[in-house]
Amino acid sequence: MEVLPPSACYQQTFYILYGGQRYFVPHNTGIVHKRKSCHIDINQLAYAYSLLQYYGHREKLKLVNRLTDLENMNRDALRIARKCADETGTLMAGDICNTNVYDPKLPKNREMVKQIFKEQVEWAVDEGADYIVAETFGMVEEALVALEAIQEFGRGVPAVVTLAAHYNHKDGKDYTVDDVEITEAMKRLESAGSDVVGLNCSRGPETIIPLMKTIMKSGVKVPLAALPVTYRTHEREPTFMTLSDPKTGKRVFPTNLDCFLCTRDDIYDFGRQCDELGIQYIGLCCGNSPHYTRALCESIGRCPPASQFSPNMDLHCIFGEDDKVNDYLRKDAHKSFIVG
Ligand SMILES: [Zn+2]
Image (cartoon, helix red, strand yellow):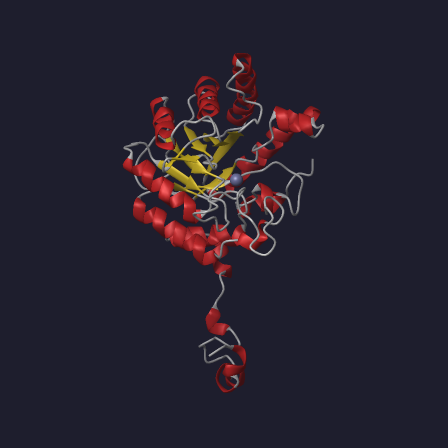
């Protein structure tokens, strides 16, 4: 496997679709915003590093004939993550995720899936993970198996469990792939002992927020997590797999999603909404890239190192207000660059 250079971890954003343009690695990451106390002690930080284990599990690597690299790949990723977390005084999360082989109709399958989680959880805690994220589960039953594995093999580290809310909408309600109403699914995860519950992937900011509001109203008491994809999903096409290109009508997932990319303002607004709603654990899933992470951090009043590179429009040759900017373009020829 090509191992990401350590500096890549600092970008905090190497999600699959973004990384897919540059590397062939399983990876994943999230950021944490903490306001009130829960079992995860993250009061001082804005980021949690790692998660490079996403899709680095037995089933996925078997598909790409890399099973012999399984343990090394996981441990290498975890060590890079631990180093990043240590250097920046932040937390490191291990990661387990949808196996894509869970089948509720096959009881034996449950134990097989649990073993997949077990080895990844054990490697994560061996390498010093502060907590484990279990994510992107379409089926709540698989998420519950993941939580069980964290509780049995995670040596007491906290669990953040998030579901991907796909397009299973009936009678005005949203359901998991295994047909459990989403708020009920959250309650089952909470009752089973997850420290944080919520949603990641599948939905963009515009369609994840209404669902988060529904979850909040349902009375779930543990801190909530929201990590949308960075695409402009909307009411008619609420998930990134349902989006179709307005020009061609073709499904855009996964390689032509670019025409639905969020703007930085979309991401900033998402962060503000989460903050106002009191959603304590926020981040971005598929499609994320460094400038989005920076916008999200800034939306909740953080100033990550990357903020020093945020655009300073005062110095722009046409729109800048700074006296150092030459007058001809910004004043005399201004109309040549704008409409109206
Ligand atoms: Zn995703």
